[in-house]
Length: 282
Image (tube, helix red, strand yellow):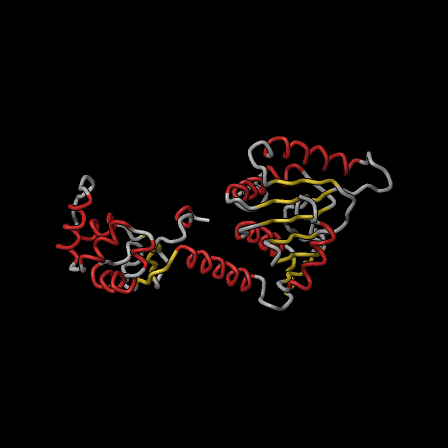
């Protein structure tokens, strides 16, 4: 989540046309009025705003103090901005005011709608071949709270090398970890013994990855299991499940490559059983 959401009682403006968002501060008004006022004291700030904006004294004082006092004058502020301040990103003058908590909810809703559209809404969508990998990477990039992956097989080069897309899988996961997203990986298949080649390769790769990243990211959880399922769940809201093994196959297809199919689900009634079965650790 963006850093400006930390103070829940601050006032923000958001462009209705493109979504550009910024906090309402006295410095913003100085910028709009073309003045350099960094070193002004409180009284000078109030006088400057009172003379330059045309606002009542109470509004100018609220701008200087910010916080909850400014929230009461959101309507007057946005009316003034819609006349004076074109959006730096799209040049529109279609501002609206929000508290930080409102923006937070709006951002979450927009993200949910975006992913809902990507995964086909309330219906099950079937992806084949290259489109499966695209859907998987889109899920990683759009996740805001949690990524959960269960696979039997791991290939180191799939995680560390650029297979098809510009980003490596490892770099995508690191980006998610940096966003504060929890990442869970359940892996491993035993074939009735604990030392088979596939399991050892997966174990060595995951041990190396965990040793490298966990000291930096406490939101990474890796657990060995005995699974043949291939499933990825994002934010407990979007799920890919099918034959495609996300951590051992890059998704490059030729005329000789076996066909793969994966279902994409948005419905919680389908997602919850998978999550409860495989991802209660961490």
